Amino acid sequence: QVQLVESGGGSVQAGDSLRVSCTASGGTFSTYTMGWFRAVSGEEREFVASISRSGNTVYYADSVKGRFTISREDAKNTVTLQMDSLKPEDTAVYYCATGYGYGCYDQEDEYDYWGQGTQVTVSS
Image (cartoon, rainbow, N blue to C red):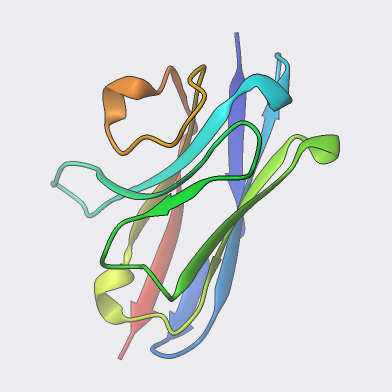
């Protein structure tokens, strides 16, 4: 059983930066593909970014491409989402997810474990 814990959410102004992290326990982190999704209250989760188990491949939603950067540090069992040039429409609960695939995935059913989420609020 893999457990994921997100951290680093908060409230910022438009144009600011914020970093959210996710730490995994209970498995072999280097064998996981990792992803970030987000959800606005009452809506379905949407894909944000994914990084392959090797770390060599990353994939972003068009809405965040060029502003967000996903990275992983296997020695610390951690994946990080660096968010720059934040916009009010980035406001959401951000969820970390992990799966056993080799590539990057933008579909929820490719992921087996999920964190509880961390709130990111961007005001104008």
